[in-house]
Structure formats: structure tokens, C-alpha cells
Image (tube, rainbow over all chains, first blue to last red; front, side):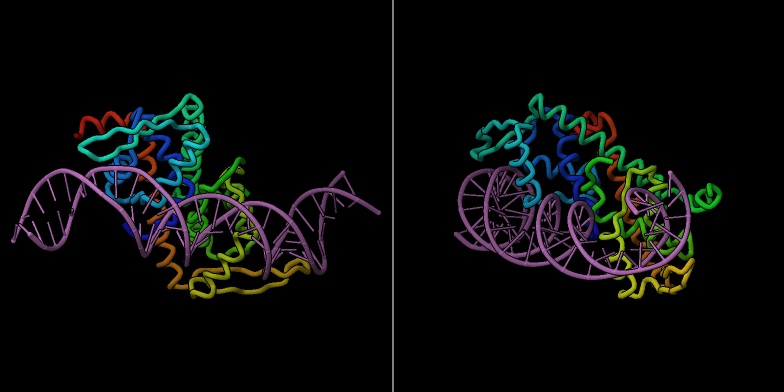
Length: 117
Length: 117
DNA sequence: AACGTATATATAAAATACTTATATATATTT
DNA sequence: AAATATATATAAGTATTTTATATATACGTT
């Protein structure tokens, strides 16, 4: 899926978006969802994921529930009320950013730029 | 314009896009273009800009021409042939990334995800 | 039975990219 | 005279992600 320095800063809002849509998810599930939804283009690594989840927990944005499934430990994450509003903000920011990028990438805006002067 | 960690990795392709559209530009002009085109939402700082431009020059992606305008030095940057193909690649990557983000942000994809299982 | 792959969480070191601060200098506006 | 705009440049600090590593169970294949 090529080099993605582009991800920086987008992972947190992406995770918050997933948690907004899915109520509760565990770490491994989140990485798989991102992979599926992005058609393999975004690879959310564990080294990136868990620090973000732990940070969200520290900040009170998510709460965890541990369950033993198939003899393996699973930690479910879900948004708190605080987390829901954080998510809303971060998702809105990312949406605005995506729209801004689309304007910058729009073909021939260079012409408009010249005409605007 | 709020906190933008989101920029990371996008600045280089944005600069390459501008140089693709405008043939030749100088540093200050690039920062102003980004500000205008993004309606003030993206602030390209000098500390970010010049290292990127110098890197592009080192890599042979751009060439420079110095001119004295209004008694001030101005350094124009333009893409080399190599730079044009680099630009094409990086811009395509950013476009793909933006499309991927749009899929992830699309409302209710959570439902589709559930249905797909 | 052994091997690889998938599932599952976790941390630390290293790399990268950007922000913030600072420096220098001229032109224009208030 | 002072502030703002124009113009380039570098260094220190910060933040975020990648890469590497650790641990452990389940399942499918040869």
C-alpha cells in the first residue's frame, strides 16, 4: 500500500469515527476494520493503535471491558459521553481538512488563482 | 485555524501540486497561495516550507533562479523533468488518500460493514 | 507432530515531519 | 516612528508513527 506518511494525525479521528459507528470494538478488530474499509490502503499498525487507545482511556474518552473469548483475552473499547463529543469534534476537523485538500487538488485551480488577482 | 497535526505528509504533495500548476513560484508566494486557496485553513509556515524546498532541490526535483525584485532577493523554484514525474506520483498518492479518507468518513458505513459480514 | 498463519495485547527505540523560536533585511502603510 | 508586509533561512523542541520485539492461544495444513 505504498508509503503513508500521510496518515499522521488522521489515525485518532479515524479510530474515533469507528467507535462512533460501532458502539464497542476491540483493538484487533479496529485494525481489521480499517484495512477492510480502506481496501487495504491504510494499515493501522499495533504500535500506533494501542498508544492511541491507552491515551484515549487516560483522557476519559473511552472505557474498557475485558472479556475472555475463545480462551483469549479481549479488551473492548467504547466511547464515554465525553468521548462522543471529542469524536464529533475530531471527525468534523478531519472532514474539513479533507474538503480543504480537495480544493487544493482540484484540477486547474491555478487558473482561478490567476484570474482572482 | 485550530490545531493541524493533520498536515503531516501532505505539505510536500501540496507544494508539488502548486509548482505543477504555476510553472515557477517563490517561497513566500507559495505560503500565500496555500493560505488563499485553503481560505486560511492551512498555514504553511516558513520553518516547514524551506526545508522541503531545499530537499526537493537536493533531490533534483526543482531548480532555482535568483532575481532581485524591488531591491529584495527572490528565489524562484520550478520543477525539473524528474520533478514533474515525482509530482505526478505524489499528487496521485494524496488524491487516493483523500478518497480513502472520504470512504472512512462516509456516514453509516458502519451499517455496510455489519451487512458485509 | 511441526509449521505457518490468524488472533490478541503490549511496549520501546528509532525515524520523520512539523511547530516554534530566532535571525536578518527591505518596503510600505499608519 | 512604529507596525506590518515582504523575503529567505536555520535550529531546537515536540509529536506521531514505524519498526522491532515480546508474549500467548487457536486453527489449518502437510
